[in-house]
Image (cartoon, rainbow, N blue to C red; front, side, top):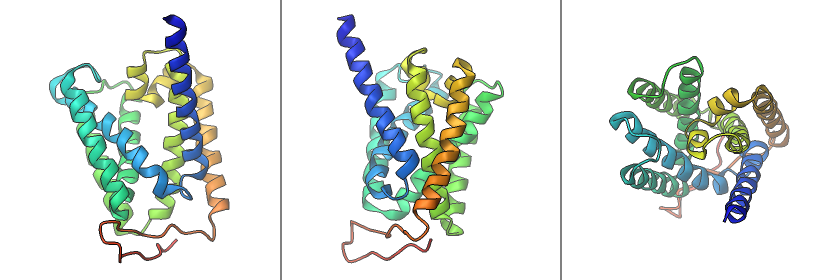
Length: 221
């Protein structure tokens, strides 16, 4: 039984690391394929944390948190798949939310309603600024590098912490677990940004609307 649990955890960890590395170093180039996946998992975490913040439950500790998380995740995944603007908003919003929550909890604040509200405001603000100022390419590169590095580091953090704690806040968990994980996160994020910038200088992701198959134009880099 223990061996089966270890094998399951190891397989899940390998998959998470591969996805995180792909997101970190090829997030912009593979944006349209990776975003529905990221949208689902970000929506799952956001939905569960919303229930946690509003009702004071532990992360993914109730049926309601799982149901809300899956619903929000499914909505984000479908919208990311169908609409370019939604995909950009999801990745920018997830970066804003993760940074705001990570900074506040990193300086000692407990996750609760205040931290959640600040995270939501930061998510909406960064998503709006990204679209209004046409910063899509840079925000996608930075967001995928940072969030991908966070996914990899969070996977390692699971080895030393309960998985729900690591999933809820992988960056803070990594900081609390080992300085080496924090260093790994920073190095990976910077390397990812540099690598993606170098490899996509002449590459732009085409805008899309799969709801309307006649739509589609190139995004200005």
